[in-house]
Length: 362
Ligand code: HEC
Ligand code: HEC
Image (cartoon, rainbow, N blue to C red; front, side, top):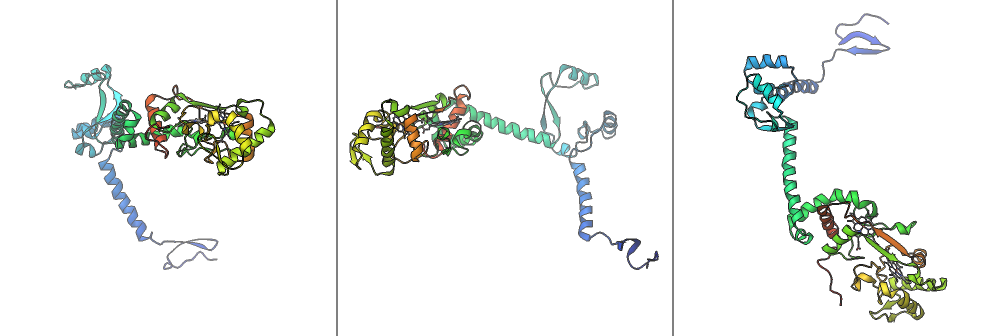
């Protein structure tokens, strides 16, 4: 290896294990980027607030330029000259601070103790505070308007309905999604049927899907109770099996009841007798559930539609009939204010199954 190197080979003469250091200029695009960056930084420095200054330097600069608007704790940039709107600083003046300013010779001050502090000149944080304050003002006005309207009125007013829906996302996520799912789609828990929660997006209601009823459900909660064996201890295991088969046949359409509880399809005479005696009181003679029979408080499920609260397999249905169910929807009266409950009512109503009004049941 030799130390000698040719002056024309574009090398610095340094070489490590065969790797040579060359003197190539940086690529043109890189150089341009560098110069443009320099210009940009200089421009930015002049236009926007940038360098923090201590009091001494501040006094000197102010003394020289005579323009206090340009420095005040930091250089404020020429944005301060272009746009000298007062921006909110988030603090208020104290009397001591005002006295100190007056002692310094600012005798023409119009501020009083308790006034908001303002800073002239543009800063990103001040602009953001301004924007937030503007949004807050609009939001507060809309919230006040919501408070004065009924849910039906909100539903009929496009703007307010949209506003309520917007506000409902976080409320629903925080208070309801754990049980009803993030989209309100409910949850059928095969392994633990007692931890199944109803779908709020369909039109299959337990208690009713018009605004006032939904509001009542959220406010007061619900406790639907299906007693073991419909409350009749004398039912045998065989009776429970018979009823299980019958309930499954009602859902699949193999058995059908009319409104008087008469079997109009299928040969389940004995099973229907058990049903009418022990179950019809809550689920209705036609087995269509309390709601479709005009009772909006019992929550007894429609057994004919094949939509299950707890699961439609034979073992789960048998378990429901043998051991009963006591699902509970918690009351939110103490946890949420009235406006929040209205907002959530709008959300549930608009999830897909909302009813216009209480249905007429003859
Ligand atoms: C701890 C679990 C739980 C939470 C939290 C919960 N729910 Fe429920 N919700 C239930 C259960 C269980 C039922 C069914 C009640 C029953 O079967 O007796 C229900 C029923 C309902 C119903 C009635 C549906 C119908 O078909 O009539 C509505 C409406 C409802 N919930 C809305 C909400 C809203 C809105 C929230 C949030 C504020 C919420 N729920 C929070 C468990 C919950
Ligand atoms: C006191 C009223 C009442 C009686 C009597 C009653 N049920 Fe129920 N049943 C309910 C209620 C309420 C529910 C919903 C329970 C819940 O949401 O916690 C229910 C739920 C059910 C379910 C679950 C359906 C699903 O979608 O998962 C079945 C099955 C059922 N009942 C069958 C019967 C049978 C069969 C009888 C007669 C032996 C009977 N019930 C008697 C009130 C009653």
